[in-house]
Structure formats: C-alpha cells, structure tokens
Image 1: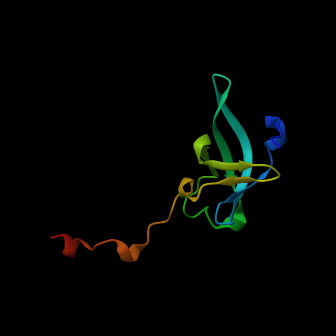
Image 2: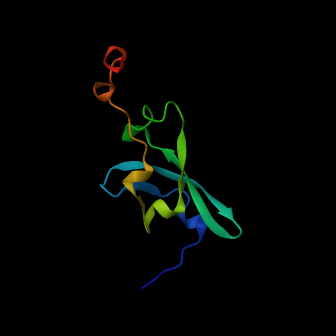
Length: 96
C-alpha cells in the first residue's frame, strides 16, 4: 500500500546507496512549483565520501536518483561521485 509521507518526516532520515552503503542524512528538500526537485544530503563521516567531495559537507541529489523513501532513503549509486584513481590517469610523457 502506498503511504504518503510529509516532507518534515523525511528530513533527518539516513540515506543509503542501492548497494547498501551508508551515504549520509537528509538535510533539506528542494521544491520547485510545489514538486520535489532535489534532496540536500549531508555526507556521513563514516561513509568515507568526504575525501571524494573535496571538503564539501554534502551534495544535492536530483529527485530522479531517489529509488525508495521509507524509514530510510535509497539513492541510485550513479548519484554518488566517484573518486578517480591515479593509476588510470595517463602520464604527460604518455600523451606526447
């Protein structure tokens, strides 16, 4: 059964990726024309994503990346920035 939630009930809920990793907590809901546009997520220190974000405290996830809203939020892993690995980057000598 579909249960309608108030936005105030969702603020403060934990956010997980669809692979089951803790990402953070909902801080705010962004509305445009009375529709949800995005979710401001504060990154949890335990998630290890703070280094990837370059010191930012969180990100804004567009609503289309939200997979489920209940006791927790589940976001698509494509919404999470990925840290580039240095091994995959070609050296300047290889480019010349």
